[in-house]
Length: 334
Image (cartoon, rainbow, N blue to C red; front, side, top):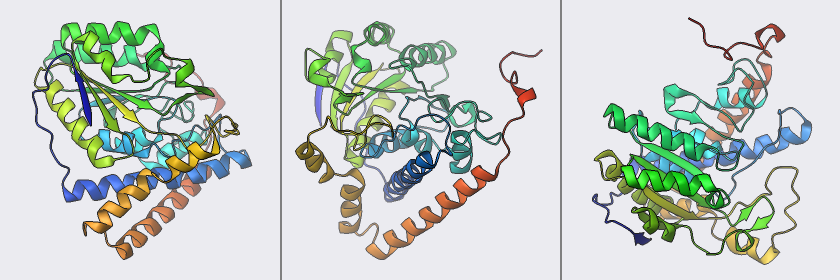
């Protein structure tokens, strides 16, 4: 982990407990299993709208959210399944939302990109690149005014770091020392465009110095390192130390969506990143440390596969929303 700092962090990094390591690994495996199944369902036409998978990026969403309190808030992106599962979303209701069913988190209206549930601290995904950055910053300001002690984590990609709202929001967050952690999932490609064609500099984290906040670069495929960085940043924000920008260097191992052939990524690049699959790396660490023996790992993965299968079956069997409910949740009622 490297730090590019405009101010110094005030909280020491904390190692995840054995229980936290096991739970992070379980959730990462659940995200991968869910997305593989959703990819198949998308080909069959049973899902509603596009599917943006996060294969290869599971560690970021799961490990960062593991450092949060239940009352903390997350804003997500169009590639948010790891954020949702990491924040405690129910797999069945998430699948129902993706299938456009009444039992989904947003009554089947959000698809997979816009899932929200305030009760678990999920302020929502966003289909607009960088669209959640102002939302998250405003929520952090509200928490500060309320003296709530709550923290916001804002996920976005390196493509979103090139828009005006990124600079405006990080500037005001640094100025007002807002309780927010900006997490850039740097997966090198914005749709089909490599970062070298988007940004005049290769790294995002050094920009933090211009906003008076720490900027941290972390291996986005190392769950434990991500947890340590997030825990430190969240603790700093919670005690009034202000925001942090965390850049997670990773790679998505699928196309932008399931309709994308991914032909623009060189095969050798994919081979290099495949050798650093975050789930495989984590499994080897847990096995080597005696935290999760191979037989326990196999049993856990089998349970996850059954849970995902049952969740998808429940979701597909759920009713579709009635046409008469089209205005439900659109207008406030007294």
